[in-house]
Image (cartoon, rainbow, N blue to C red):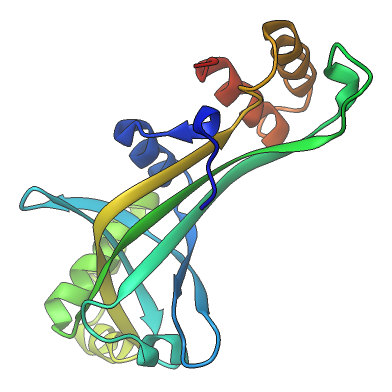
Length: 206
């Protein structure tokens, strides 16, 4: 990913927090003729001093069939984004841009064929997003769970590198950044523009 120095974020704590907050991502790998990409939710875990992303493919997804054990993959997380108008800049000789956050995670894929391990990955995901329902999941009939597990290919990605691009107008002046954050903060709570405004306030110019 192309990252100019002023947009680069190498704070692993911030990057992993971003992943946890925005778990839906794209896993990409080299296909036979074109890149293969699948949209999946991911759960970040730590084990044995290493970090992993857990998820599962549908067994019917041909992408899973193109991946061998230890294959190199990239998992791409995207977050809030917003159009930035040049009306917020001090000089008229400017053009629009777009602010956004993206985190690329590089790693090696490991498939898990054991039923217990596949169930553990599902429990981890449910526990992170719907803990109140986890007890119901655990109470499901074992034959139903076994049949369901046959329909997925659980896996983990052993993380080897993070890349963080926080394009938040760090290349603009202080007054221009204030104009932008003030404008974006006017959007309704929960809107991506307001979330970008919050990230801009927390990520000052280098």
